Image 1 (cartoon, rainbow, N blue to C red):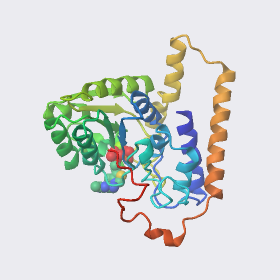
Image 2: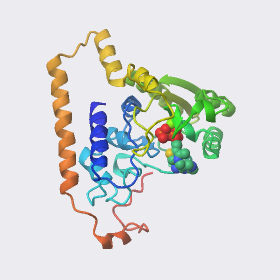
Image 3: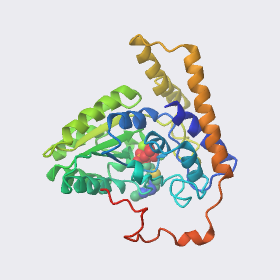
Image 4: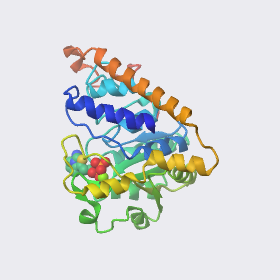
Length: 319
Ligand SMILES: Cc1ncc(C[n+]2csc(CCOP(=O)(O)OP(=O)(O)O)c2C)c(N)n1
Ligand SMILES: [Mg+2]
């Protein structure tokens, strides 16, 4: 979680220095969701499909920080060779199927990946993440319905950070408790403290165990979280009060984990914490250096990867 936090603080800084072009949505405050999800799953057989607030999830699924940073910089060494940028971090070899910029559009894709798992008689679970503003989108409802009818292994996770750009969920949703929407499709819904990494891990593990076996139904989880920064780098966040942000920060995911460690008698020493800080700082520094020293994509590479060739070894056929 600390790597995600420091990576994003640095991404925000280099963005303001003009080194990153295009959109950039920071994940600061939501780290417990990405890490809790990844810790509950099996990277060999399970899959991730994600929205555009995706840097933290890419790091959680093992894409090296330098490769993520290089993609933000639009460099040839980036996760998708500098052609996708911040919102389109893919890493098919690590079962990360994006990074999608259109709100809600990734949800049916996850249903397709889950269908292919059942069709091929594999037992992978697909986790799909989306924001609170995606749940009023038709794609969300169609996907839940189809996954329920076909009993597909999908864990639908709404990262409810309470805002879609500048609109609060109370203003945009008739039912602001997202987990309750599961009942419309006769699947199980559950709200979980999205600032508590262990609670997220346990909830996702339970949901994955339920939907993994043949005949298992999908599950809808609502991870209650909060983004500390604006929607994107261009957002001054005038639609909420400073007090609200400060109050949320008192339930910070890193602090919550420390408290839980201490309560369990595993009090880490100041030295240990300093060592973790130093390791993370070094990793982020190296990521920036790698991105800055990497070449831009060659202009002619714009024609590469437009169409897939069946002989291309880079095409991952699984699933
Ligand atoms: C279909 C569609 N409509 C509108 C947009 C513009 N848009 C980009 S992000 C966003 C808000 C999404 O908020 P939420 O789903 O809560 O995710 P968060 O940004 O909070 O992570 C909107 C409306 C879009 N990308 N796609
Ligand atoms: Mg939101």
